Length: 268
Image (tube, rainbow, N blue to C red):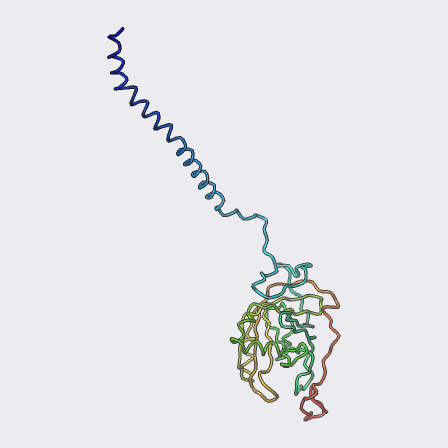
C-alpha cells in the first residue's frame, strides 16, 4: 500500500488543497454576504418608503386655509352655500369683519346727500347701482373711517408697514341679509389713491365677485385714499344674529357742520 501514498499526496496537493482553500474563502465570505443582503434589504426598504403615497380618490379640498395664510381661522364649517351649480341670491351686505385686525362693523346704506361718512359702521358705495351684493359677478365696495373702535384704522396702520404686505392672505368676512357669510382673501393693497372718479374705474369694471375696502389716509380734507382688494374663497352659513347686527352708526363728534338742511353724516 506504500505505493498509494505518493499518489494520494499528489492528489492532495493538486486538487484537495485548492478546493479546501476555496471552501475556506467561501465560508469567510458568508458574513459579508449576509451583511450585503441586509444592506440591500434596508436600501430596498428606503426606496419603498420614499415612494409618494397615492392620492385618495375621494379626497376633497378643504375650505379652510393653512395657518400660514392667515393668523386665525373661521368657525367650524357648517355648510357650503351656494353650491357650484346654484346661482347666488342677490342679498345685500350687512356686516364686515376682518378677524385678524379686530375689525367688526355693521354695513349700512350711505345716507342721502352724505357730506361725511358715519362713525361705527361701514357703508357701501352706490354709483349708478349699489355695490353691496357679495357673490354676484361684480364688485362689493365698502368704506369706513380710519378710526379706532373696530373701524378701518387697522387697515391704514398695516398699509404703512412694507406697503401692507402682512395683510396679503388675510380673510375678510362679509355677511349678507340672507344669513350667509361670504369669505374673501386679501390679494392687493393700493395706497395713495387720489379722491377722484377714476378711483372707481376698476371696481366698476369688475365682471367677477370682488371685495373692495376703502378708508382715508389722513385727517379731514386729505384727498388720498387706501384701497384693499380681496377675492372670494367660499361661502358658509351664518345665524340671523351674526348676519343682522344692531348698530346703525352715528354722526361722528368731529364731523363738519351741515351745509344744507337735507345733508347727513354731518353735525346740524
